[in-house]
Image (cartoon, rainbow, N blue to C red; front, side, top):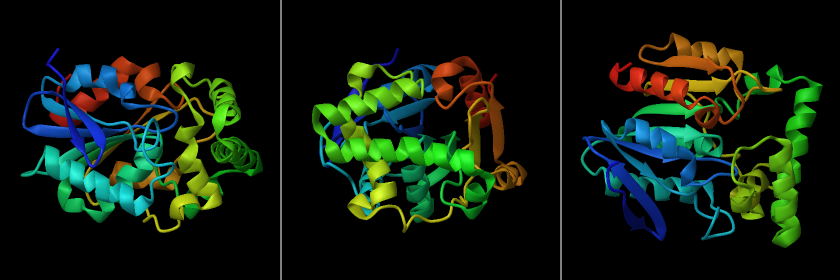
Length: 265
């Protein structure tokens, strides 16, 4: 293993590990931390420098981070860890939403994107793809988590951990707190300005989209998936698992990522 090193950018710790000129910036989602990517870093560090952070507010920092502020922070991080060339983004869950927005606002700083399980989150096509049952399910768990964030404290954390168990989240429950729910409060209550200003997910750079096939509903539309698959240089890959693809099917995920990035088996 290559030695891990840490830098601090605007109060956020960024951990770097690996070698090579390519820099891969990894962003997690709910209810995770930078630890989500440990296996992925081990599989990629021989060819790239892998950079990880825990999203602001998930452990320490502000109660919620505005979308504009998150994009500004990501720009500062990218400029620090790779000042002379664009980076590859690797994204999961809410990390997809924040990462997509950064890539759309600063396409000159992103060369390609690997995204996991969340696609066109704000499209009409996705909304149409959900029936009444799917819409109620999405609203139910997300509003629960948004309320847990608003309540805060031990009760909010108990609510959050209960939902994580119900969703079969593989994250260590002891690391989960209600602080990690603020993106749901942004989505449903408009906290920190919400996400109404988020751009449509139509990335100008190549995209590898990997998703779990065994879920009660998808976080992408078929129309968007087909558009990604048809784009030169981009690809899609479904795997027989749930939402946490890199945990449930680590070897398959790593093989597809290495193949797409570098043509490695």
